[in-house]
Length: 320
DNA sequence: AACCCGGCCAACCGCAAAGAT
DNA sequence: GATCTTTGCGGTTGGCCGGGT
Image (cartoon, rainbow, N blue to C red; front, side, top):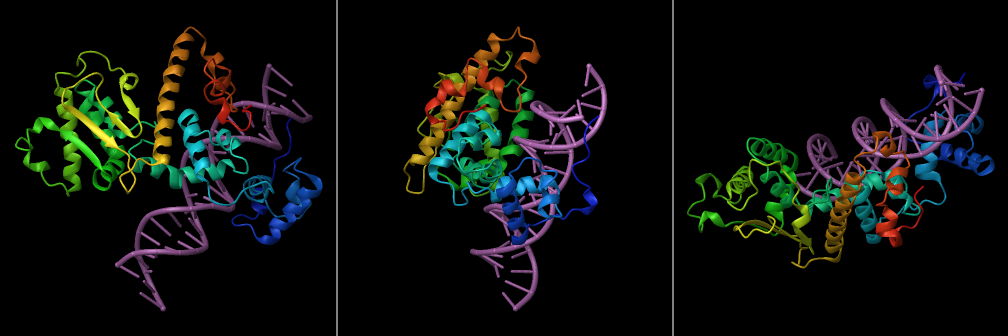
């Protein structure tokens, strides 16, 4: 047999908490602790679900919480950890005293994601968009055009931002001084034409002699590409005249400390994934169950490539 | 002044692991 | 061991607010 349900949904209040409710909850927890969330609203005189009380306490009322702006150092920590851990908000928040997973998640979704996109870095993979385009371009037809279309759909906004707002230099030297540029892509200000430019660039890239053989399976090129200090380029070991050069510069044209840090995070991320990739290769014979991740991320940190090994000095709290 | 729009963030929802019976 | 609740987590939503028109 199990237990009784946590609360009857009909009889509970929802929505914003009032100061009176906050006061009731805080004073009850101060006296009795947080032992059983199901009973807390009942005993504290609140018409709330236990789950709602728990969230209110953990995300807002807890006395050890910080409520102010995120510092630059905190932002850097989030980006660095996100590049390694992905959307593991609870684990990331554990490294930021006074911040909750909800805080970190909201800050990421509203600020950091855009900040990275604005710098030309894909916030999901932490790779530069130019790198993604390069990877797509290494695919053989007919996949490449389809994927390019899909990617353009996904990254259209970010690409447009890059191409129209930031200092970006897409060198399509094969055009031969512009004479070979198709008429449809000559007007810089037109956004649709910008997309056409990207498509054209990708299709050109696919046809380049320096490109990997089209009849071979795709392999990531990250291991041989350079990406330091905000500048990224280009095809591995090729001097084929086709490359994207992407500079993440601030308004004054300088590479900011934040930008450099973000780029280093991305570089670190790339290195880690290579290492993780190797590690997973080494475990190819394992049964899948042994690699299954627990909610606390145990397996990640039990693996040969742990966050501790790679960044032990940066972590403030042990990850359980 | 009224309306619209986008950013922000608290709160909710649903799922899965952990724990209790 | 099976079943059920509790807890923790990540994704999503809805409302508030400020700026722009």
